[in-house]
Image (cartoon, rainbow, N blue to C red):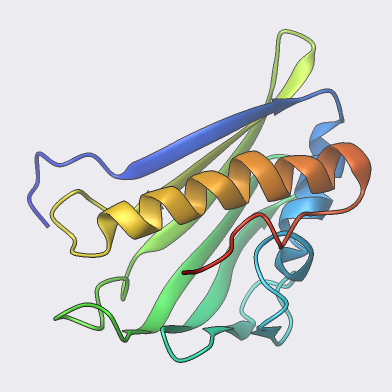
Length: 152
């Protein structure tokens, strides 16, 4: 990673409380993928993400501060569509939750996901949709939208 590159980040603003946003984030099966195995909402737990043959990850929940922060560490990663299938390894996926103008703001950052990554465009588009469409819908309506993304 080049030191002057920006990590990928996106954010949403919702009317629900920080506590409600925190609970939703910790249920990635409801907003990111049904292909998640393991316990996602306990510090120290390792879990898996599997999107068919194209993307698999082993992730560890490393920080949970109720109503404020969620941090995941990508321990292992495999992309079938990049020269370096391990691009995400060592990346942290961070959700910062705060109150802003009477609403709750969720700022998503993947530390290490930078424009020089081969997967950057696909990952940028994927995370933007998962956070701004599916996670936002889960927080505001109680049901995420896993079908917003239809792979080609």
